[in-house]
Image (tube, rainbow, N blue to C red; front, side, top):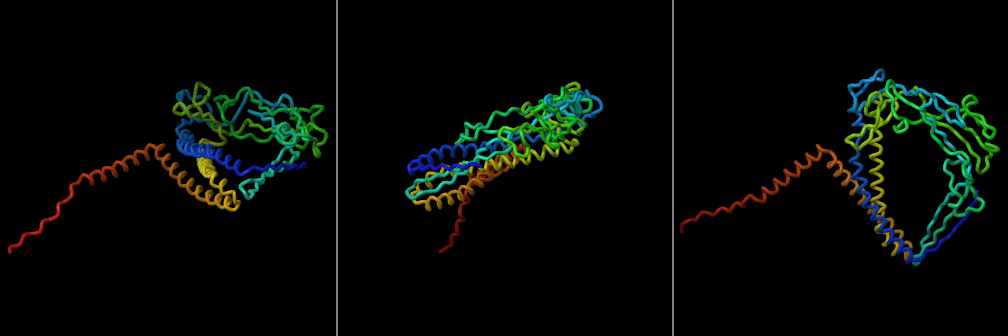
Length: 380
């Protein structure tokens, strides 16, 4: 491992200037957070869409369902096996993925910033260069210290190989454009791997190009494979067109064209779970955008107080705490309002409640005030 250190000093005025620029970034993030949160609740739940699919038998083509969203459950099949023409013999696969890794230099960075009395700062960046297996080696020209850390071009590229056709039962579909289940690793043997003079089989996981697998050199290559096997039980969703299942577009916009592992009910459960998980991920992303954006907006205050580092540190902590709770409240409000406006029934209920409240307020205002009772007149 090679290690280098670089130190950069920045003055008080420069730090204030950077914080002012950060305000613009913060405003953009703050606005973007509302867009993310609003659109999150308006996403189409494909699990609910899939519930309306007509279940057709995998044994014969049901022409009565032509042009409609259907689901068919059965085993994946193909009329012709597929492999990697260079490194893997054809086998019972619908899709084969060639994974390629190169032993290469990787740049790791770690930055530490120290505030100085007077508002300036000193930033120390440590660059570490290590060698490891990676599927996306960096170009050495992108390194801070490229000398002695040269990565050659990968001699083999990742690739995907598709069987000519794919189907489920009596139906065929375009497996190149449909979303498919996760692939499984292929166990390599002398029977299915294609031997070459510069390629060696290592165990049951890799084909290796290099001098020594245990002590590889920079530029050495290892290849592994994953595949979606025939015979796997799946449920396919799409629009029926003859004996083909093609992409289905819900309301002409949201695409549903997918094969999922398991039965019809299991596939729907998977779609609903994915929708729910993605919803929470997007809500967290929206919250973080809002929180970080608000923090950046108030950044110049801390930059100004950095003239005495402990004041800047205290202000950053206070700003982070206050903006955290503001972001939490705004995130919840935006999410609830978006849920209401994207749910027809909830929106109708909301409008009715608002209407009743307004009617009550207006009728109270129009009601004439009761004149005070006149006391009876008594004789002298």
